[in-house]
Length: 430
Image 1 (cartoon, one colour):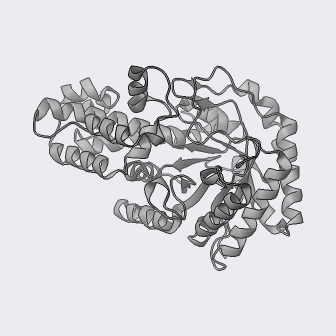
Image 2: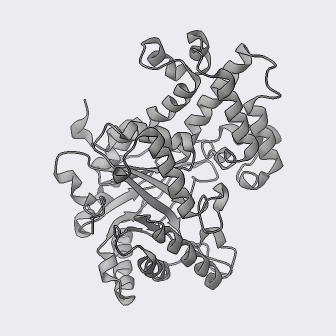
Image 3: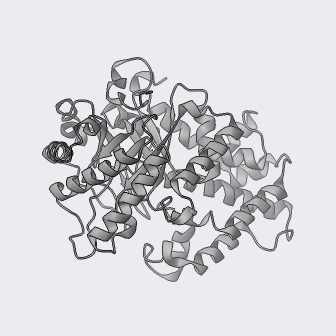
């Protein structure tokens, strides 16, 4: 049996090469392609994760099951020329969250079915997230109940994984940030305390042992904690390495583990590097990828209006506004304020809840029409400077082709490159 590439991630810092790995949490094909293009020339494997809301046995908001998602990603890899042997698929927030409005027994039964599907499809990094209460329960559960439910899901995964395949590694934790970012403006964060991290580790170890899963617990490689990073609709909390010193110091007491940092979207390259240096070796990024892709697509949308006015029934932005207003459930309860403020958030919030709408047939068609309209023509440098200013220096220097699809991919590649560089740690800084 081939070892899981992540099984010894805790030891990466002690040898040449990367000290951590980005976790690409998206189902957008262009974002995935960009991540592959950035990772291909490096010595990193590529970790792509689907969340419980994106992909599950019921299809999630993408309409894909885990097996479908695997085929979807592998098709992109074939087109890009990315070796499947360097591809790691993960499942994020696997637990009852999509069904938390149900009683716990029903929600957990659904969660078991979901993780079986992920394991059977060959996903080899599984984040067990049972921290949320279900109908009639507290919003957040205590460590013991969370760990017991996590062990229950691990049992289902172990029973369903291909026996001749790579054994999955697991991520645990009880202080799990809200998937996709916070809903309100954030004024401050309380970091996970060292005692809380150690307790979570010990309680999960006991729960796995009680369930007869000591071997599986040996494949727990990461603990989700709050290192002091988060983003809301309007602002970002930046990482403060000094504030996390005591938390980082607990890692030697949990052999074989690293910390997994969620919600690292919008952190600077310097902050991401500091996270890796401090033991937060798995850097999850999701909405940030589609945020910069949306920026690029909207910039191209404006360029198309300049070059080809009246040649489309309506702009991409107008299409996205219509799509979101027609199906408000993925943004309505998350955005607050006046009608004008909510309209602004629909398109430009850090939470990037517009990402739920890119798979919509009307949205997908509008993007395809935009890229087809601009085609392979060289776009004027002056319009790139006006509407895609961050990409202009590379175009001006001849490093980036001034064509629509190249520009959209480059926007995501620039962000993904921050993560790749950061995961080499500060010793690799120029």
